[in-house]
Length: 80
Image (cartoon, helix red, strand yellow):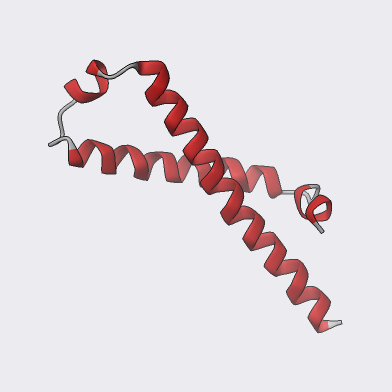
């Protein structure tokens, strides 16, 4: 089932789109907790912060997309 889900057309596009949405949300939350100060982002290690954003958004985007497509396959199997 895993290979079927990740090879479905549109799966990886969904991962990227949802990842971008989660990245924007994560950025806004981080920015809000620092008092809307851009100095926090420039004072941190940029590669570490970038790695956290990329890994976090990939995990979120992949898990939500996988659940969405897995549910679609299960619903289609149930209707047959």
